[in-house]
Length: 222
Image (cartoon, rainbow, N blue to C red; front, top):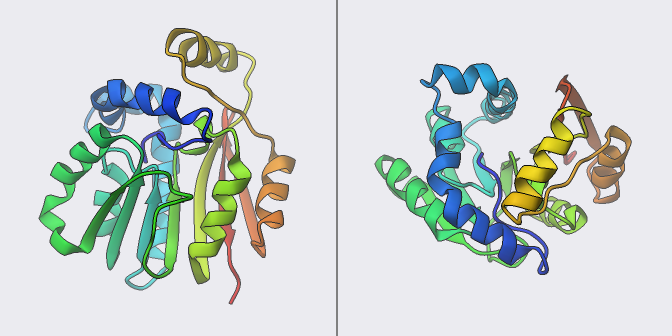
């Protein structure tokens, strides 16, 4: 659920280093009991609810979380009935937080450090979560194709995607790229549809609940 620390080979070191440094502060962004965070960042909680809605639509699903960060969405997915949960992230600091948060679920949890496109994964998944992942990825195509490969028949990818906003866009560019040396990317609705359809997803649902982002559910029919 937290921003991914997995990117293309040229961007990966910058993204990884950023989230190594910022692991704790990003984890705090998703603190449900923090009233200020909910008020200032409603999009974070809207996309979380969308993801959980998809998880609950399956009976005891296998859930894969790409760019799992500190495991906050993983905790909620497991509480919502996930049979098992696999989280992949590039930053060990994020995975340390996730390991601590998810310890109560025992062997239902597997955490993997590395680039999602290269790590070995066992079996296929009913729900693949990618929340806050694509903000930092230069080569989204390779990630979406890999998600299609590991999606079970009838499975879904749930992703969040930023779009350019005249007010927030410049601020994000300065904060991430200039101050923190971390790349940031934006998407369009037509581009997202092409991205998932070209990867082989038969049904693509795109929502725009706010002015600064999209939510996507892409389904493998079968």
